[in-house]
Image (cartoon, rainbow, N blue to C red; front, top):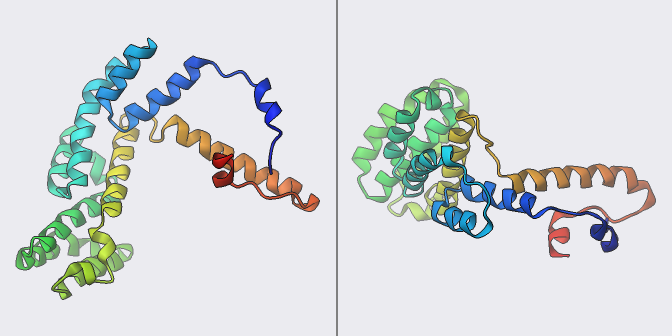
Length: 215
């Protein structure tokens, strides 16, 4: 459902609101240097209280992206030991990163031992059984990239785990776990879906976020 562009001209958006949206994105993703340059350019107030935490988060996220799950766990537990204890899904995913790194390093005996001591205990909960089986399946292939579970080796998987870890740390610190721009897009999508339901009987085209962003 398209909106007449003339309606946009009637909505006044303050520069400060836009600046805060951009700042939220930079802080969320630990782009400290870019954030400092943006603050200097716009004159917006810098979130002083978050700088130290941002540096810590950046290191932790970096280790997750590098598939160094154990180091990411160590640094996360330094922030608060209960953070991962209260988020077992995330804890398992970080352990799986280390397991995958062992597999990729062709240290399969060590990988098997690690799986038996660290991953297998999760099998007491049925929801982890399939995840454990997926990890173990990598050991059956000389070239893990050719395994049906090759996605566990991908940067996309590492990015997913790192993003979840970043959100968990932010939420634990009582900070927004999503950026302002993400929340705006979520809000816009929901409103668009509701409008679709209201106008479906009139035969109007459905709202598409992808098409809207292209317009």
